[in-house]
Image 1 (cartoon, one colour):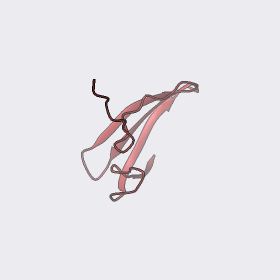
Image 2 (image 1 turned 120 degrees about the vertical axis):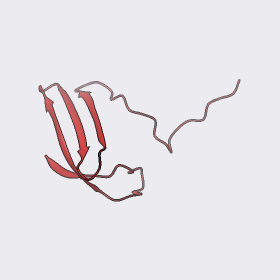
Image 3 (image 1 turned 180 degrees about the vertical axis):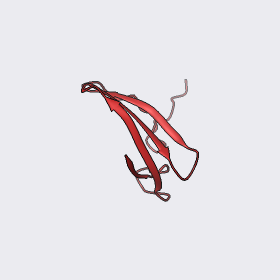
Image 4 (image 1 turned 60 degrees about the vertical axis):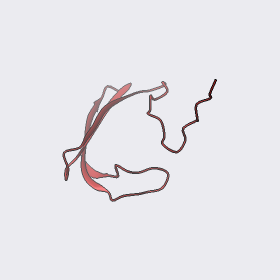
Length: 70
């Protein structure tokens, strides 16, 4: 499915939207999603999401908790 994707989107938009193609599958319980930017060679994913389970996400660059020293 065609659409737009902002690869640098954080809580505040920092860059342009890129034309993208979204594709994947679902079996009604699990969904797999891949995003391919069509104006660059960047492909993100695939990521899998399962209904009822917490998503596994990378650290947010502005929400990271500092490590405690000790």
